Image 1 (cartoon, rainbow, N blue to C red):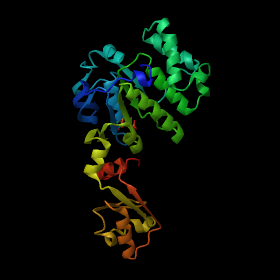
Image 2 (cartoon, helix red, strand yellow):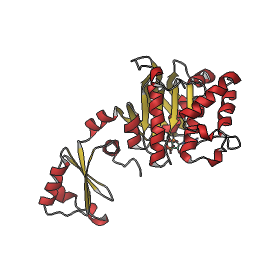
Image 3 (tube, rainbow, N blue to C red):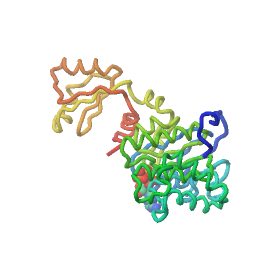
Image 4 (tube, rainbow, N blue to C red):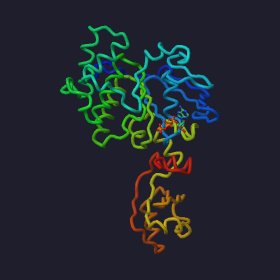
Length: 321
Ligand SMILES: Nc1ncnc2c1ncn2[C@@H]1O[C@H](COP(=O)(O)OP(=O)(O)OP(=O)(O)O)[C@@H](O)[C@H]1O
């Protein structure tokens, strides 16, 4: 990781493609976990793979990281095929796996040193680098702590610090905040913003729509190994949803039977087991129309459209089942 201070941030330029995937496929037996996906990521971009469990996100990350070979298609990381040039590709990458795999027997700082030695980095570099990374991860006061005494958020930050030991140009983050509480997530997002500012290309998977909206310049929505849509969060929402959504809860039985009585209100209606969604550019006006028909939901909420709505529109399913 470069020193993260404002004076040293690297300006982002429209520059070279650092990851290029074309028809990328991974098959287990007769099952296509990744089914012919194509995308390109320019240097400095924060690029996301958004999809539910089992969509093929981790499998894609493992192929990019050179730890799982592809079945077919083309893949280049910094112009190199990870299946042929694994060590060279990995030298450019920092990897934050879905599950923290820190060495619980070592203290916090020693985890960084041990990982750096694995990369063959010299002692003279590693000491100062470990201190810089601890500061970056807000773990300086935990340098001598045992890993098993850290909170989930701290462990995640240590894993990120560790992934930066070799100053990677590209950081792969597989579900970086799954299982963290909201405060820990926000601290982590802040660290990722700083890396982005410093010019690191971020590739992340998530099934959290808010994480995708916050962190990604651009993303692909994936489902069952395929790309359903691609674009910036704002563009995807504009293209696939209305400005606002009216969420109504009528009670479990009624939710599924009320649709006919709501017909014509808003642009589109989705019926879910626990609620009815009315897609409308003016949610309040839609709510007034509901009341005018004498319908009395138990709760009503007007909110802006999100990537969750995009996913629902594209797949007919909810992101978080
Ligand atoms: N080694 C494997 N052998 C067989 N099937 C696998 C293997 N690894 C993954 N799969 C299957 O491939 C599909 C995609 O898995 P993957 O882990 O890439 O999904 P994901 O989008 O990352 O979801 P999650 O968030 O649950 O990790 C799943 O159906 C999974 O069961």
